[in-house]
Amino acid sequence: MEKDKLNILAFESSCDETSAAVLQNDKVLSNVILSQEYHKSFGGVVPEIASREHLRRITDMTEASLKKASLEMGDIDLIAATSEPGLIGAILIGLNYAKSLSAATGKPFVPVNHIHAHLYSPFINETKPEFPFISLIVSGGHTLLVLVEDFFKHKILGTTIDDAVGEAFDKVAKMMGLGYPGGPLIDKYAKDGNPEFHKFPVAIIKNAKYDFSFSGIKTSVLYYLRDSNFSTLKNEKLISDISASFQHAAVKTLYNKVKKAAKEFGVKDIAISGGVSANTYLKKMFKSIEGNGYRIHIPDFIFTTDNAAMIGITAYYKYKMSKDKDYFLKESLSVKARPRLDYNNF
Ligand code: KG4
Ligand code: ZN
Image 1 (spheres, rainbow, N blue to C red):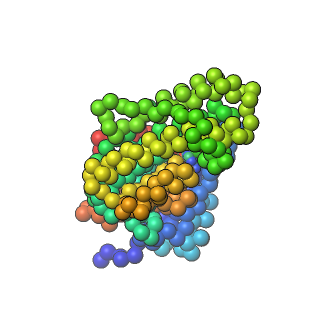
Image 2: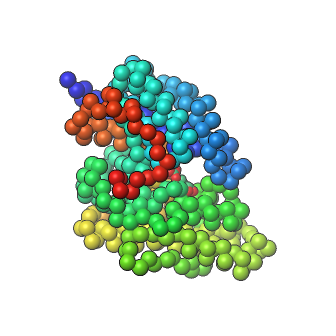
Image 3: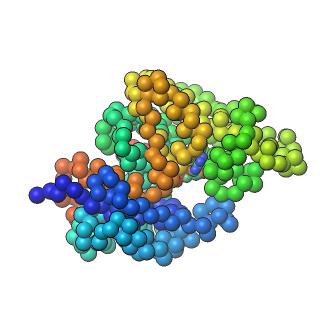
């Protein structure tokens, strides 16, 4: 007989966060995250360092997550890990660790697509999105607009044709010499800046109404910095104003497309997730339409950037909705790590 309460142990290791979480069904009992600091001095993630650090810390993280949840390995019913997309060497650490635990304990193993995990992360909230809903996934590597008709019934409406929005935040921050990751820094400076200080243009893509392009805005910031002699005039006020103006243009683009899609598909529930959904200005802009009958679902801050709890909740629904539970006992152990997102089988 199937248990009505499943204890899930989940892992995330696709980039530079080593994370382990324990859930009981859709309830998060623990979510421990180790953000690898080593990459900061390199201005970006160094894959080899990421893999080595995952390997060094994954056992500690597992023990910490179980302890925090007041459970032991023997209490776990389901094991989950990210299998795609991300840095291949980094994914392999969490994935193989989880598979080994599954093989050793005989507990089912659920491989999870990292982007699905961002998509379902708002289900960690008490108030869950109702189907159908529009999902905007905005992270460092991906920008996706998705119509979600039911669990794992996704239709990608649009994606970026060049940079991801998080990448644009990171690059603009780097141009101003702010450090990495740039998103939180732009967010912080923008709070004291004027969003109308300078109008940065956002590309309109012909014949693809839901696709995004963020490389143009990045280039226009670059030219602006050069032409306005930023490196000589640089001060906090100027950084704040440029941050606020860039952020306004980037967030407004996302907002306009989401609203258009919600209207076209007659959808009232909008879920936003991924690292950029932590952005203060983005939250404010989207929350402003809640009065018009829209329901905006954004996960709590710790569940927006990479974390294992979102892997756990996705595994929970994936397992629960599956008609072939046996698949997770043997076949799933042969799932391979994949670096790229498969847009055709999303
Ligand atoms: O989802 P995530 O943690 O990792 C990926 O799967 O990519 O997203 C990381 C991205 C980075 O580009 C980071 O700069 C951005 O999310 N980010 C933000 C904020 N916090 C993180 N961007 C804008 N505002 C923020 N507050
Ligand atoms: Zn992510």
